[in-house]
Amino acid sequence: MKSSEEKLFNYIKKKLPKNVSFIDRIAEVLNISYDAAYRRVSRKTALNLTETLKLANHYNIDLNTLLLSTKNDNKKIVVEKTHHLIEENFLQTFFDKSTNEIKNLQQSKGALLINSLKDFPLYHAGNGFFSMFRIFALINISSRNSKTKKMPFSEFTTSSKILKKHNTFLKEYNKVALIEIWSDSSIDNILNQIQYFFEIGLITKSESLMIADSLVDSLKLIEEQAKNQKRNHSKNSYQLYHNNLVPLLNTVLMQSENQKNIFVPYTNLSYFRVSDENTTQQIEQHFKTQIEFSNNLSGDASVERQKFFNTLYQKIENRKTRLSFSTNDALNPVF
Image (tube, rainbow, N blue to C red; front, side, top):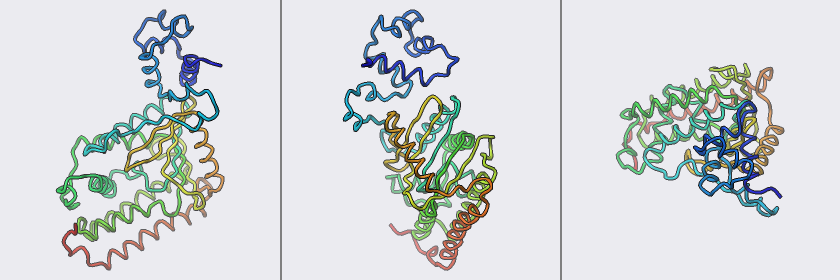
C-alpha cells in the first residue's frame, strides 16, 4: 500500500507539465533548497504536517484522497467553499475567485469548462443593459441593507472596482473552451427576476423591455458561437447541447490534462469546490450521460439550433407582451 507522502507526490506529478522539474517545484512551494526537496521526494526526510498542508493547498489536492484505506472511505470527501461568508462584497469575491480559477485552468493544456445550465450563466451576460441588471439583481437579492433593497434600478450604480473585476471576469471566461448543456427553462429564472423587480416598482416598464431586448442580444452571441463552434473572443471551441430529459443543476466541471475540479452551487454564486478524483470522475460520467441524451446544436445542426433559440426568443417576446400590458410600473415599491 502506498504511503500518504507517495500518494501526494504522485498527485502533484500528474498536475505538472512534463517539461517542468518536479523537485524544483517542490523546493519552490516549500521555500527550501533543491537538496532538501530531493530528500523529501526520495523519502529520506519525511514531510512534516505544515509542508504536507502547504503542498496540498498549493496544488488543490483533497487530503481525504491521501487517507483512503477502504472502499467505504470513498463515500466521504473533503470540499472547499468558494465563499466562507456571504457578505456585502460577495460579488467582488466571486469575480476574483472565478477569474483566478479560470486563469489557473488555462495554464495547462486541454483546458475545458463544462457547464450544466439550470440558469443563464453570468459570464454570458456581456457588458450591456442586461449585464447591469444581473449585477443589480444579485446585489439586491443578497443584500441585508434595507436601502439597497429599495433602490430603483435607475439610481443603481456600482463601483469602478467592481466593474473592472467584472470585465476581467468576462474577458477570461470568453477565452476558455466551453461545452454547455441547456434546457428550454434555462432563461426562466432571469425572466422571472425581470418580472419581479418590475412588479415591486424597482424597474420601469421601459427598463424591463430594454433588459429583455439586451437578453436577446446575449442569446444571439451564444447562437453565433454554436454555429461557428468556437468562442467569439478566441479560437477555442464551443459546443452547445439541448437537454429536457436529465435535470440540469448549474454544476461546473473545469478540467485539463493536469487537473479536474467540480463546482457545485450551494447558495447564490457560492459553490462547493471538489477535487476528489473519484467524485470528479463520477460527475464527468454524469455529464457524458447528459450529453448522450441531448441534441447537439453546434455546427451543421442549423435546424435544431434554430428551433431551440426560437423557443427562447418566443419566451422573451411573450414576457415582453405581458409586461407591456401591465400597469404595475405606476405603483409604488411593495416591501
